[in-house]
Structures are given as C-alpha cells and as structure tokens.
Length: 406
Image 1 (tube, helix red, strand yellow):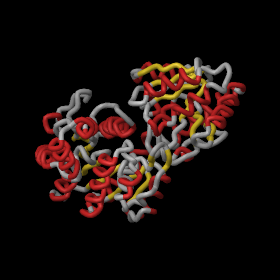
Image 2: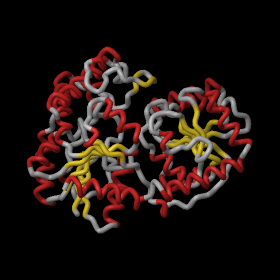
Image 3: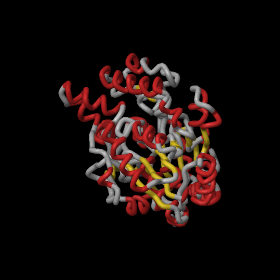
Image 4: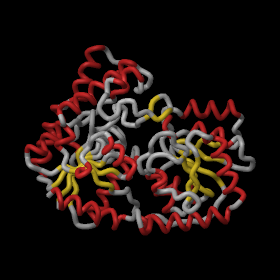
C-alpha cells in the first residue's frame, strides 16, 4: 500500500510531527510505501518530495507585524490555498497513493488538498491531534482556562472571548476561518476522523460529528527503541514551553517540595516568563535545560524519579506520557482530557486537580518519600505500553480503517 502522509511541519516539532515520522517508519517496516506532503521550513528534515512542499509562512509574524495587504493575503491563504492544491495535485499525479492520511494541515495547507484528493477518488482519513474541528484556536482553551464557548459551531464567539492571544483581530481571523470551513462542509469530505483518545472523540460527537465517522486509535511508541530504567532522583518535564502546559504550577509546586530537583527541558514562547517566575518565587531547585536533543533527553528522563505533566488544557493523548512509560517512568499528571486514559492513578502514576500547585506538590512529596513505589509504577507503566500502546496494535487498528475506506 502507498500512503500519503500530510502534516504542516516536516520536523519533530510536536506530537503531530512525532506521530507522522513514527508512523512513516512503522508503515515502511511493514513493506508499505510512504509519500510526504508538508510546508517548507528551515528546520525541515530532508525529503525527496520537498520540491512539492508549499512555501513557508508564519501567520503569527504576519498578523503581528505585517501591513494590511499582507494580512489580507495571508488570511486568504489560510482559507484556501491554490498553491497547495496545485502542488498536491502534482504530487498525487506522480506518486498515485492509495490513501491520504492527514495530520495537522489546516491554515497552512488548507482543505484545498482534500478537495484535490477527493476529485481523484482517493480515500482520506484524518487524525485529529487537537480540537481544530470544533474550536477556532484548536485548544478549547482561553486565557489559561478551559473554554467551550463556541460549542463546535458558533465560532463568532471567539471574537468576544478573544481566545487568540487576547487579540480581537487574531480572534476574528480564526473565527472567520472556522465559520468558512463549517459552512463549506469541508469535514464531510473526510472519510474517517481518527482521535487518539476516547475523550477527544466524545467532544467531536457531542458537537455534531457522525459517530460512524469517528474512530479512536491511540498513539503508539516503538517499545523496542526504548530501554527502561527504574528509579531515579529528579522530577522532569519536557516539551514546548507554552501556556497550556501549566509549567507555572510546576514551578510553584517545586517551591513546596524540600529536597526535590525539578528539571524543565524544552523551549518555547514562555521560557523567559517562566524563568522570571522561578526567580520571583525563589525556586532555586528548578533548572531550565533549554532544548535537549532526543538522545540526551532520554538520558535525562532515565535518570529521573518520574515525569511531571501539569497541563491545564484538554490534552488528547500526549506522546510525553508514552515516552515516559516506555522509559520505565511513572507520570504525575493533571486529571484532565485524555490523560486519565493513559495514567492510571496509583498504578502507572498519580493524578491531581489541574492548576492546583499544592495538590501537585503533595504527589511529588509522596514519590520522593517512596521511591520504591515510583519504581513499581514505572514497571507497570512499561508493561502497559508493551501491551496496549505498541506499534503492532496501532498498525492493526489503522489497517482496519484503511481497508474499510478503500
């Protein structure tokens, strides 16, 4: 089978990118062929198809600093990209895939490519890594709090909430784009929508998506690529430093746990703010590692007692949890979104109320005082990814969906 994998970014930037690359490796290991389509970007990994990728654009930069005409041009591109359709048409003509599997693609690549695939009678499936189909800003989050004001269809409410960086103009842009997508019925062109978590599927269905077209297929890890180590010393968080990850609460909790060292690996727009917060709170036991390459990151995780994930948004099915489990580490995480579907409280980790720094601190104190329990949870976590979130299980479920739409 030849599969065309579509994702805006073609480098390991977030969970959608991790999944795209891991899925490509998995498909090739089974003898399937993979074709990529994405946007050009300075950090992209090399691809034999990059001459068909669309030109790079950073909508954030354009809307923050661009002139009126530039903003209007960028907004038009976010609705429907003729360039993307033309280049995708050329790619499909050359490679003739059996199926198109979309990841994150809206705004940069747009539904123009879906129309092109359907005009050629190529089945299309879409993995919803976030809440783009029902939320203009894709996170169901506004001003640091869960937000469901739009209800999956009344996207004009985003303007009043100002959920896009507290900007009226930015919020208007995503509200118009979401409304346009809904009125055009673009999601009806997709044969099957895959959600990594049951929670995400329930959100889509509650907002009117046909249950027959929504399937749950959990994310996966190639377990053989991870060698676990049980026990350790530090607490570690890794990922992009953005508001929805709730790192503020981890820093606050760290000040309440004597003897704990907290490592924060990763970079992002909130790094300076978070470093300042740590200084203001006197969190001398918090260390910012900055960007850490994948191999070194795994080493730091292996040295840790556990991974901490204090998210304040409806996490779907985070890769950081799966990777922690594969490395033999329990996870202390917020009881929100799809997280409880992976972290079994008291079994593979500990759950706490989102945003409650004191509750988080108590969980950290417990594991620090009971390292044997942390090792026991880490072993159960490793066992769980070996039996439930492994590549073989994922491939079987995905092939069932591929076969159905074909």
